[in-house]
Image 1 (cartoon, rainbow, N blue to C red):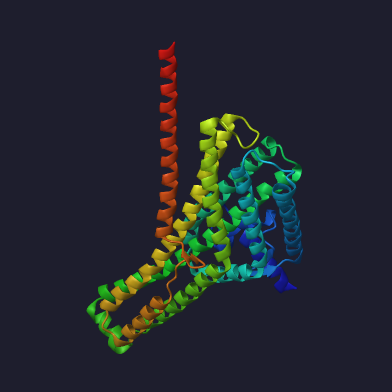
Image 2: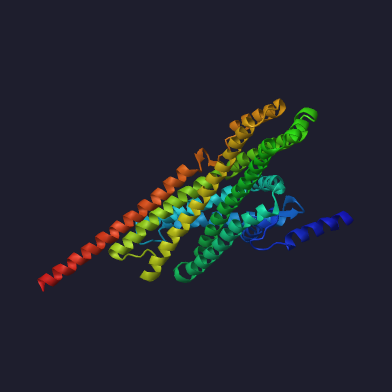
Length: 414
């Protein structure tokens, strides 16, 4: 009885002290993500103290939502591709809608299937990140809370706009925004996990740097006492602890890659597809004034530009987090070699060599089925976005010059 009450009190104190941009632990850091995910049936868990458990009620709600979503997708694809009851103004718009529905529903199915494994991942990340300082959580919360909150607000405004302006039935107005929310929050959950693991790698690197300073800067009599009399038990114990923590974090990175690989691939394909199609629709609108949805021209132009900015920022943030996380993990190897070059104790050297071998065998790259999420992919993404913008600028210049020539020809004729 008392133990149950104490657990409840712990849980209450943990969640009650949550503040925006002022996280102090894993739960307060992930609080916005968990709340938003719960609203859309993407968080079928409950937290007892520091333990994740499956909530039967939330799991049933998630199952019902997925079944309805799958039925809706099959129905809408049938209406678009077979029955023809849903018609768009051109073939590219039909292809874009097919791509959106298929990839969005694929992500929804993968999210549901990986529900239990994702719960174990969150539990593992909570455990390995428990050693982070409150200041580290506070720094993380500035990014994580900002992107989760502002992203949710943007999608909420986008959903209201979608519901008011588009001439579709209620089913379409409900499920299209839901797919947007689902894809966004699963992508942000992945990015949150990557940022937390990066902070864990940074903590190990900082501790190794502190050990290096201890070895280099200690006074001679203290070094003799540590090395020769006590055989440096403190450094050995710290190195073994850090090596064990590094192994746990590396295993967590591998678990993260396995669980989110299919979702990441679908997100990357969807992002490039949406950017390509939206740019095409924008050029089509500028060239012949064709609008693929029933809204005014100026609103349509703003809508397309904001959509392209949204997809661009989201994929850039994802790849940036993965690339910086990989770099942070690689810094540990450099620090270990520096420490190895600054020590002469055989036991410490042996432990550092084992640590170095462990780092070499664990690449700690964030990937999706072999596709490394690093600077190379980020460069390709930025390059493609830049190419899209250059094409758009060239087209605008060409269109303006053509308009000026026509205007001058009309003037000369008159």
